[in-house]
Length: 314
Image (cartoon, rainbow, N blue to C red; front, top):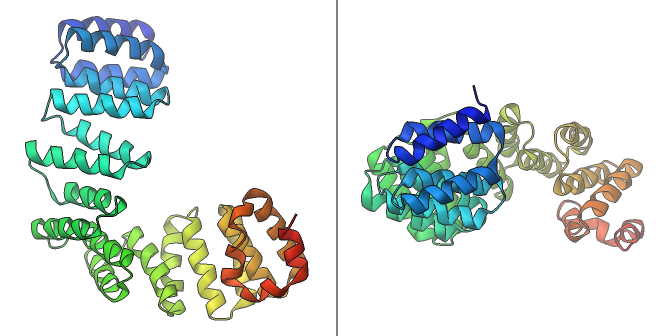
């Protein structure tokens, strides 16, 4: 079904039927299946020369460029897609998503602003705009957008979460916690809310509550290094050092980021398991020596430990 012959057949139709969205959707599926990104790029570049206002051709060109790891060029193609066809919502959304992934939140913000001018938006669209604004450093704008989303849907958990995340950026933890609790009232299973609650409860000296929310994330996403780190932090803050050390090795069976390795090492040092601690510390330092200061965040007394300093000076 997804062979080159059918791809070429659809390619010929695309030149004759530039407004046939189904043809371009089928072409996109075949490109992903076959992996002929370079060939597809040539096809869509020819199509956009023949039909410069064919938004679907520009959109497909964007995905071909993503397949070729040319993200900046892909963003331009997605932008041409929605400029050519201002009602092509998927082009705005895809452009904004890849702009965020590639570290261009202001570009994502512009995508959503452009979309709002041409299409009716819902609370989820506004939440995505809020994310873009917050990541671009415009926290006040992000909060205002999240409140607009809540006007459209007062029970939208994601909108509550975005408002909370904005307050957390400002270190207004009281308001952040308020909106996170609102988010959970609307959706008890909202994982990002549990994740941020775990982090904020640790920061505000409530590790027993952080422990509970970190576990909620881990139950659904055991590969979440951030949740495991929050859980270990909560155990250290409660001086449950043996539990922290045991839990650290369980965490490393699921995920092994440098931050988690440093945290696991700290847990073992606090539990007086120095042999295991040094093994973990050496792994962490080999992977990311620039993050070595993380160790002292959880075990500050190790600053005076000559054996630890020797490892970190290699």
